[in-house]
Image 1 (cartoon, rainbow, N blue to C red):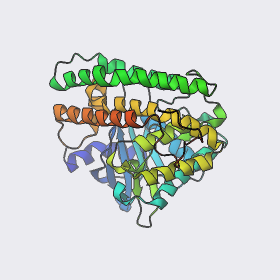
Image 2: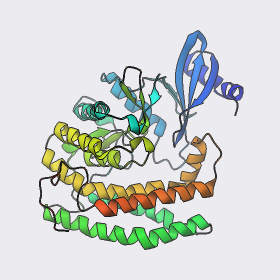
Image 3: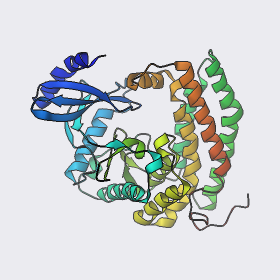
Image 4: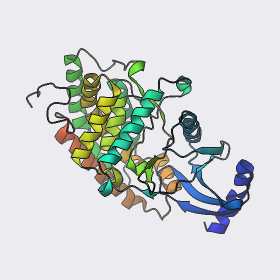
Amino acid sequence: MNQSETSQEFGQSVHKLLGDRLISATRIGAGGNSRVYRIDCEGSSRYALKLYFPDRSGKRDRLFAEFSSLQFLWENGVRCIPRPVAHDRDLGHGIYEYIEGRPVSSSEVDSSDIDQAAQFLSGLHELGQSANSDRLGTASEACFSAREIFQTIDQRLLGLSALKAESTQERALRTFLQVEFLPFLGELRSWCEARLIASDRSLESKLEPQKRTLSPSDFGFHNALKRSDGQIVFLDFEHFGWDDPAKMVSDFLLHPHPAMALSDSLKRQFVNRILDSFGDREDLAARLEIAYPLFGLKWCMILLNEFVPEGLKRRMFSRVDALDKGVLQEGQLGKARRMLLGVRNSYRRFPYGDGSRVAGRPDDGK
């Protein structure tokens, strides 16, 4: 779609939402679930226009989740986010402040950037105590017990196992699931149950509401821009809501995006900043130690979304370039295999502790 066609398509929507005449629309970014355009209007006004993938399943209204959460944060004085401007739920269009900044590369992330990320999440945790925070829903695939984490893994696994294995990539996926993933899933489930029993908990033990936090749920430098003054602006709140801080931290550490390929020392710094600011350090650290490998297996499943028809449609909707399904699936399977290997090699000893066991507990002897 060329620029004039895009401008013509969005013109009525922009005029309806802003009352301005659209001059131009330019595709920017490369999200996995949406399309984002820089739009220029009369009077030199500039905004970001986001088109959301139409989720026919009805599981989550991404536009409403993002716009309402940004409204809540903006009303409570948070400024390291885009200001929400206007939206149309029928069209699936959201208009936000356009952020002048550049993508953050993992090679440039330093201690101050980690501090900004941790301070933002700590601020969200404090906002959880504010008025109207209870109106916010749960984060996307929020998990408040080990049982719920395994259920999300099993649900995703069910969809992948149902594929007919007609293509070379699908046959390779089936082999991976049967030979590598499923045996380790059983091993990790047993390990998790034993660890929970040792701490007087169970798979069904629910995290108390007062220990939950507000979370973007897809948080990291892959969803951020850095202004010229060094301030980081955090983006993408489609999955925002209440969640377990252990999940939030695990996802930050595990995220496979190249912008999140951080050094071990920076990851340890992040963990310690969160543990210091969230209170009850020992409890969160103990839960993080158990949750981290479980979310690693969930990430294996997420990386395989492109094998599932709905996941492939979302990727096709958001991509700028042409899509080679076979090459894409082969690449994602390779990422899932590497994620599984990393979890398998590290699950008995949390890799981002401070040198001792993260919860101050002796090694389990293995």
